[in-house]
Image: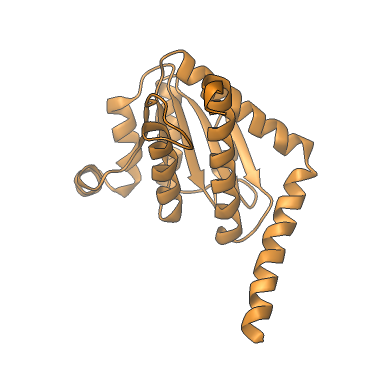
Length: 195
């Protein structure tokens, strides 16, 4: 029974976080702005880059493959890449330091008109902070899926979306919901025949 109670508490916490979001018009408006930025990027021929550490890196890869593969139905592949493949990461971490892994790859691949989507539950990951700095240099807009108080990144990204939660698990659960929903919303606009 103790285990069952834990399950109920975990799902209740997740529900409370989602309810806070649903009751926050500013949060929902930022999600809609994310939709607009992503749609504009693809329509103008730009590419989307994503980045994160640990579980957020897994979410960054998941987000990119939904565009280069498919979400619900077949459509043409869209330009998306999660920064930080293993050979690049180990090379740059060895030669320049771990804090440079994302900015170096973005410097080589990114162009004005692209979009950078970063995920950080703390908002303070130095390699993400540097990637956002590089994006600004390259005139690449940035969206930050963040948590807690947003950290350093809340004032650096063009569009901060801060999940009102304190623990990484609750924050990442909402990040993946945001990513799935922005994919579906943009797909509905660009590929209405799929819906």
